[in-house]
Image (cartoon, rainbow, N blue to C red):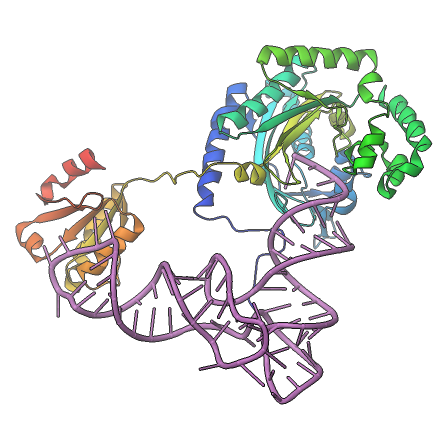
Length: 416
RNA sequence: GUGAGUGUAGCUCAAGGGUAGAGUAUCGGUCUGUGGAACCGAAUGUUGGGGGUUCAAAUCCCCUCACUCACCCCA
């Protein structure tokens, strides 16, 4: 029979890796509420239009990478490739803008993109992120950037770099793009084939090219920060100033562009020098037109999204947080029912207990207990039944004591 | 979507045309009221799948699938 395997680009997560996920999730739910973020959960699939309008029809994500399908009523639905558009949609739909203050949300969950898998890239992958609505201050940009950076530090991710740029707004970007296009056309023949196409489709992306020759040439190209309008320029200066208050270092990176069309002004990315080609742990920025474009009020947004799989790759081993485990061993099969009775009473009290119903002798049970990493083995034998006692063996140091059954609760409180 | 590398036991890997093997894990025994060791023994495979060459293919050739990494894209 043919084995059924997980679909390409998906994977199972189980111990010991799952401990890292738990660790990350716990830290996340502890950390971001400090900044007044509240968790929001949105559907995993949405109408395709949400992403077309939100992310932009010209982006790679929308054009090539979405999992889109029709449901039985012929609706066009898409497995969400990112979460910002959904959060905005949810906020508009539920009129959260009039109810919840401050307007800050964080999310965590699976996203889907039809990409070719490689290190740090999956078709079902997981992101967490935050969104701040209705705050146009440069200081909030700095705070969001700080919190994302500091969170990575907090969970001990090392060798990370913060890259910062401004991508301008609808007032200054067109002018910049015009200049960029003219300049790149002049040196078109020297650029790689892909970049030649980008001149007309999305010239900003030329800065993304990893071809050394292209990098060299595009270094001479106009930089967006030199073309920012007064408002964007001032905003960017203020962001940098505010970042210095938070005392974090950043690289000004004029080549940094974002792949989703909704970004305006501040754009940032945190990379790890220890990852492979997919080195962006987290990225985000300001999006001042998205809410309006999705039919909401004319209010601004700022946020980031982080790739959990990539962060997990950079996490040191996390010990599985576990309660002390008790193994109940019976001397012989007829005593198994007594063991079950004892186990039930312990489960009822909330303890972590294991009984093996298949091992007939004590030796094997102890061996198994040892292998599982049990802390204490309770032994029930004929002597114990007669004396109404329980023998308790510490699996860590070989010591064994026998106590009366009525002393068990006291023992549990002191030792477990 | 393009390219490269790799597919052999649950796991890590040998065998490079001539009987598919080791380590480890698993199970049993030495040891029927006492675990971490040791020793002895057992079980485990359509060599990813299909086709071809050959007296003979894990090994050579073709196709296909999967995984990995890179391009691309992004988190």
